[in-house]
Image (cartoon, rainbow, N blue to C red):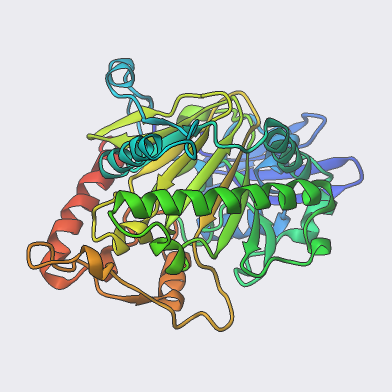
Length: 427
């Protein structure tokens, strides 16, 4: 089921009037698909991945553009060499494992209730790295509005979206398909709007008008929730409640609006490859389509759709500063033949910010002892973010370069084992 099966590759994308013409090449043939579904074929013996990737990127129309043009076979750049069976979760596993759900109801009512919530979060962070929260005080109307706003952005006329298309990571508002497209061996079936919302947000006029109000409003609620989460995480670490906030963990907010169109061949690709998040903490708002999976105890486990809930997961930098007490775990999103799937991920993490490049992060000293020595070295914001964008989503941990030498073999074995599972059936 590798590239020998229906291996089509996008070569050019041109938009003229109401018609988009798309040319695909494979080792056997070239295919021209237009919106009136006319098809031409000819012989082609070469497949130049690099030029095909650049042609796709230069079109600035993303995955949505492919679908709009009538694509029925996946271009080669999207093919993942994995068996369908490996990509689907085992129903027995799903029933055996249950991702923790933490109810914030009564959080401020009593010391005892808060202690129970802290205990649940601690267990979730140590054993899963993932949990869902309910009764978090973000109104349903705000959540629905931002999901609709993201969808409306991606479903605008492509000429409007092109104004935001960029791979300049220093810009505060951009749109593209696969941030690591030029580095990754395989593309994912996903387009994304990126917004750096804190600490120095963009001017409102820089945010796409169609989702401007929704994003600004949602950011206010997420920032407030983030402070609450970092207080609870600090207490779970038996630190003062403002410890992580004082470390500026809640200072940076990077919001991504993902758009996963219905996929014509969902068993041959992924919406989002297996990866760990880079920052301190991530919250995810998703619609009812589903597809998110967490890698737990050597199994992929579906994250169930829970009305009103937000998903929270630990990032690599949180694992670093807690000296492996809290775990950042692999997760991914399956492609589906229904959609679009919309999700809004809010990353509490650093970005490229003037004047903050030298800020250092390392294991929290209060958590260290003779029996728990530091596992990681310190890293600066600039080094960390640069490594993130140079690495891309390759199924390995971003923490490897920061591991102290005596621990490096242990993390290598972990990364290798996880990566092998991701590609164990690779042809």
